[in-house]
Length: 212
Ligand SMILES: C[S@@+](CC[C@H](N)C(=O)[O-])C[C@H]1O[C@@H](n2cnc3c(N)ncnc32)[C@H](O)[C@@H]1O
Image (tube, rainbow, N blue to C red; front, top):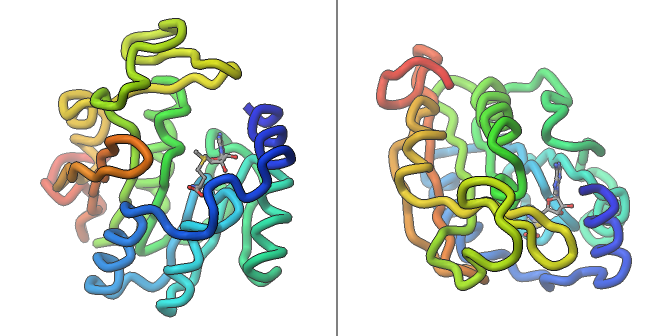
Protein backbone atom coordinates (compact mmCIF):
# COMPACT_ATOMS: atom_id res chain seq x y z
CA UNK A 1 0.00 0.00 0.00
CA UNK A 2 2.73 2.45 0.97
CA UNK A 3 4.75 1.77 -2.20
CA UNK A 4 1.65 2.17 -4.38
CA UNK A 5 0.85 5.61 -2.98
CA UNK A 6 4.48 6.76 -2.79
CA UNK A 7 4.88 5.88 -6.48
CA UNK A 8 1.63 7.62 -7.41
CA UNK A 9 2.51 10.88 -5.72
CA UNK A 10 6.09 10.85 -7.02
CA UNK A 11 4.97 10.26 -10.62
CA UNK A 12 1.75 12.24 -10.78
CA UNK A 13 2.44 14.81 -8.07
CA UNK A 14 -0.79 16.77 -7.46
CA UNK A 15 -2.84 14.29 -9.48
CA UNK A 16 -6.31 15.53 -8.48
CA UNK A 17 -5.58 19.26 -8.76
CA UNK A 18 -6.37 21.69 -5.96
CA UNK A 19 -10.17 21.95 -6.06
CA UNK A 20 -11.93 20.19 -3.18
CA UNK A 21 -14.25 17.31 -4.10
CA UNK A 22 -18.02 17.78 -4.05
CA UNK A 23 -18.32 15.66 -0.87
CA UNK A 24 -15.80 17.98 0.77
CA UNK A 25 -17.86 21.08 -0.10
CA UNK A 26 -20.98 19.44 1.38
CA UNK A 27 -19.10 18.38 4.51
CA UNK A 28 -17.56 21.82 4.94
CA UNK A 29 -21.00 23.46 4.81
CA UNK A 30 -22.40 20.96 7.34
CA UNK A 31 -19.41 21.35 9.68
CA UNK A 32 -19.71 25.14 9.55
CA UNK A 33 -23.45 25.00 10.28
CA UNK A 34 -22.83 22.66 13.22
CA UNK A 35 -19.93 24.64 14.66
CA UNK A 36 -17.33 21.93 14.15
CA UNK A 37 -13.95 23.47 14.98
CA UNK A 38 -11.31 20.77 15.25
CA UNK A 39 -11.13 18.05 12.62
CA UNK A 40 -9.12 14.95 11.77
CA UNK A 41 -8.63 13.96 8.12
CA UNK A 42 -7.35 10.39 7.66
CA UNK A 43 -5.79 9.92 4.19
CA UNK A 44 -5.29 13.66 3.76
CA UNK A 45 -3.09 13.23 0.65
CA UNK A 46 -1.45 16.51 -0.38
CA UNK A 47 -4.20 18.50 1.31
CA UNK A 48 -6.57 19.50 -1.47
CA UNK A 49 -9.55 18.37 0.63
CA UNK A 50 -8.24 19.99 3.81
CA UNK A 51 -7.64 23.61 2.93
CA UNK A 52 -11.31 24.62 2.65
CA UNK A 53 -11.86 23.68 6.31
CA UNK A 54 -8.83 25.74 7.35
CA UNK A 55 -10.02 28.66 5.22
CA UNK A 56 -13.22 28.56 7.28
CA UNK A 57 -11.41 28.70 10.61
CA UNK A 58 -11.27 24.99 11.47
CA UNK A 59 -8.12 23.37 12.82
CA UNK A 60 -7.09 20.36 10.75
CA UNK A 61 -4.89 17.39 11.67
CA UNK A 62 -4.14 14.76 9.03
CA UNK A 63 -3.02 11.16 8.81
CA UNK A 64 -1.23 10.04 5.65
CA UNK A 65 0.71 6.95 4.61
CA UNK A 66 2.80 8.68 1.89
CA UNK A 67 5.76 10.83 2.95
CA UNK A 68 5.79 12.42 -0.51
CA UNK A 69 2.15 13.51 -0.15
CA UNK A 70 2.90 15.00 3.28
CA UNK A 71 5.83 16.98 1.83
CA UNK A 72 3.57 18.28 -0.95
CA UNK A 73 0.90 19.26 1.60
CA UNK A 74 3.48 21.20 3.62
CA UNK A 75 4.84 22.85 0.48
CA UNK A 76 1.41 24.07 -0.63
CA UNK A 77 -0.36 24.68 2.66
CA UNK A 78 2.41 25.33 5.19
CA UNK A 79 4.31 23.38 7.82
CA UNK A 80 1.78 24.29 10.50
CA UNK A 81 -0.56 21.66 9.02
CA UNK A 82 0.06 18.73 11.38
CA UNK A 83 0.04 15.37 9.58
CA UNK A 84 0.83 12.08 11.30
CA UNK A 85 2.85 9.82 9.03
CA UNK A 86 1.56 6.24 9.05
CA UNK A 87 -1.32 3.95 8.20
CA UNK A 88 -4.79 4.47 9.60
CA UNK A 89 -4.66 0.83 10.70
CA UNK A 90 -2.21 2.07 13.38
CA UNK A 91 -4.64 4.64 14.81
CA UNK A 92 -4.75 6.38 17.21
CA UNK A 93 -1.78 8.70 16.56
CA UNK A 94 -2.73 11.16 19.32
CA UNK A 95 -5.16 11.28 22.24
CA UNK A 96 -7.14 14.28 21.00
CA UNK A 97 -10.93 14.07 20.76
CA UNK A 98 -12.07 15.74 17.54
CA UNK A 99 -15.48 17.26 16.94
CA UNK A 100 -15.30 16.30 13.26
CA UNK A 101 -13.63 13.55 11.24
CA UNK A 102 -13.69 13.64 7.45
CA UNK A 103 -12.31 10.87 5.28
CA UNK A 104 -12.40 11.08 1.48
CA UNK A 105 -11.81 8.00 -0.71
CA UNK A 106 -9.80 5.97 1.77
CA UNK A 107 -12.05 3.54 3.66
CA UNK A 108 -12.85 1.52 0.51
CA UNK A 109 -9.12 0.71 0.16
CA UNK A 110 -9.13 -1.30 3.41
CA UNK A 111 -10.09 -4.93 3.97
CA UNK A 112 -13.06 -5.96 6.13
CA UNK A 113 -11.17 -6.21 9.44
CA UNK A 114 -9.27 -2.99 8.76
CA UNK A 115 -12.50 -1.15 7.95
CA UNK A 116 -14.10 -2.35 11.20
CA UNK A 117 -11.07 -1.24 13.25
CA UNK A 118 -10.86 2.07 11.38
CA UNK A 119 -14.54 2.88 12.05
CA UNK A 120 -14.06 1.97 15.73
CA UNK A 121 -10.88 4.04 16.03
CA UNK A 122 -12.51 7.08 14.40
CA UNK A 123 -15.56 6.74 16.65
CA UNK A 124 -13.27 6.56 19.71
CA UNK A 125 -11.56 9.80 18.66
CA UNK A 126 -14.84 11.70 18.42
CA UNK A 127 -15.89 14.11 21.14
CA UNK A 128 -19.47 13.78 22.42
CA UNK A 129 -21.87 14.98 19.72
CA UNK A 130 -19.01 14.92 17.20
CA UNK A 131 -19.55 14.01 13.57
CA UNK A 132 -17.64 11.64 11.30
CA UNK A 133 -18.24 11.64 7.54
CA UNK A 134 -16.78 9.15 5.06
CA UNK A 135 -16.89 9.61 1.28
CA UNK A 136 -16.62 6.25 -0.46
CA UNK A 137 -17.06 4.62 -3.84
CA UNK A 138 -20.28 2.67 -4.50
CA UNK A 139 -21.31 -0.38 -6.48
CA UNK A 140 -22.85 1.98 -9.05
CA UNK A 141 -19.35 2.91 -10.28
CA UNK A 142 -18.36 1.40 -13.62
CA UNK A 143 -15.24 0.06 -11.94
CA UNK A 144 -17.37 -2.33 -9.88
CA UNK A 145 -16.70 -5.91 -10.93
CA UNK A 146 -13.52 -5.12 -12.87
CA UNK A 147 -10.20 -6.77 -11.97
CA UNK A 148 -9.82 -9.83 -9.76
CA UNK A 149 -12.33 -10.53 -7.02
CA UNK A 150 -10.42 -10.88 -3.72
CA UNK A 151 -13.40 -10.82 -1.33
CA UNK A 152 -17.13 -10.10 -1.48
CA UNK A 153 -17.52 -6.79 -3.40
CA UNK A 154 -13.73 -6.23 -3.22
CA UNK A 155 -11.56 -6.30 -6.35
CA UNK A 156 -7.88 -5.99 -7.14
CA UNK A 157 -7.53 -3.42 -9.92
CA UNK A 158 -4.72 -2.72 -12.36
CA UNK A 159 -1.69 -1.56 -10.38
CA UNK A 160 -2.54 -3.85 -7.47
CA UNK A 161 -4.95 -1.53 -5.66
CA UNK A 162 -7.71 -3.36 -3.77
CA UNK A 163 -11.08 -1.61 -3.66
CA UNK A 164 -14.27 -2.42 -1.76
CA UNK A 165 -17.57 -1.23 -3.26
CA UNK A 166 -20.27 -0.24 -0.77
CA UNK A 167 -24.03 -0.45 -1.12
CA UNK A 168 -26.61 0.77 1.39
CA UNK A 169 -26.79 -2.67 3.08
CA UNK A 170 -23.06 -2.93 3.75
CA UNK A 171 -23.02 0.66 5.00
CA UNK A 172 -25.79 -0.23 7.45
CA UNK A 173 -23.85 -3.33 8.57
CA UNK A 174 -20.56 -1.50 9.09
CA UNK A 175 -21.76 1.90 10.36
CA UNK A 176 -25.10 0.98 11.95
CA UNK A 177 -23.63 0.96 15.45
CA UNK A 178 -21.43 3.99 14.82
CA UNK A 179 -24.16 6.62 14.87
CA UNK A 180 -25.12 6.39 11.19
CA UNK A 181 -27.83 8.95 10.44
CA UNK A 182 -27.69 9.58 6.68
CA UNK A 183 -26.33 8.08 3.47
CA UNK A 184 -26.15 10.70 0.74
CA UNK A 185 -25.61 9.98 -2.97
CA UNK A 186 -22.91 12.26 -4.37
CA UNK A 187 -21.46 12.23 -7.86
CA UNK A 188 -17.73 12.78 -7.44
CA UNK A 189 -15.12 11.23 -9.76
CA UNK A 190 -17.34 8.14 -9.43
CA UNK A 191 -20.76 7.65 -7.85
CA UNK A 192 -19.95 8.07 -4.18
CA UNK A 193 -21.81 7.83 -0.90
CA UNK A 194 -21.26 10.42 1.78
CA UNK A 195 -21.77 8.42 5.00
CA UNK A 196 -22.73 10.59 7.98
CA UNK A 197 -22.42 9.49 11.61
CA UNK A 198 -22.75 11.26 14.94
CA UNK A 199 -21.72 10.19 18.43
CA UNK A 200 -24.26 11.19 21.06
CA UNK A 201 -23.53 12.66 24.49
CA UNK A 202 -23.77 9.18 26.08
CA UNK A 203 -20.78 8.10 23.99
CA UNK A 204 -23.05 5.97 21.77
CA UNK A 205 -24.14 6.35 18.19
CA UNK A 206 -26.75 9.03 17.50
CA UNK A 207 -29.40 6.29 17.19
CA UNK A 208 -28.66 5.23 20.77
CA UNK A 209 -27.06 1.93 19.79
CA UNK A 210 -23.90 0.91 21.60
CA UNK A 211 -20.48 1.63 20.11
CA UNK A 212 -19.07 -0.25 17.10
C1 LIG B 1 -7.73 8.12 -3.15
S1 LIG B 1 -6.54 9.02 -2.25
C2 LIG B 1 -7.45 10.41 -1.64
C3 LIG B 1 -6.53 11.52 -1.16
C4 LIG B 1 -7.22 12.74 -0.61
N1 LIG B 1 -8.23 12.38 0.36
C5 LIG B 1 -7.75 13.59 -1.75
O1 LIG B 1 -8.80 13.31 -2.26
O2 LIG B 1 -7.05 14.51 -2.14
C6 LIG B 1 -6.28 8.06 -0.81
C7 LIG B 1 -5.28 8.70 0.12
O3 LIG B 1 -5.14 7.93 1.29
C8 LIG B 1 -3.78 7.61 1.51
N2 LIG B 1 -3.78 6.29 2.10
C9 LIG B 1 -4.02 5.11 1.48
N3 LIG B 1 -4.01 4.13 2.36
C10 LIG B 1 -3.76 4.68 3.58
C11 LIG B 1 -3.64 4.15 4.89
N4 LIG B 1 -3.77 2.84 5.13
N5 LIG B 1 -3.39 5.01 5.90
C12 LIG B 1 -3.26 6.35 5.67
N6 LIG B 1 -3.36 6.90 4.44
C13 LIG B 1 -3.62 6.07 3.42
C14 LIG B 1 -3.12 7.69 0.15
O4 LIG B 1 -1.73 7.93 0.22
C15 LIG B 1 -3.88 8.84 -0.47
O5 LIG B 1 -3.34 10.07 -0.11
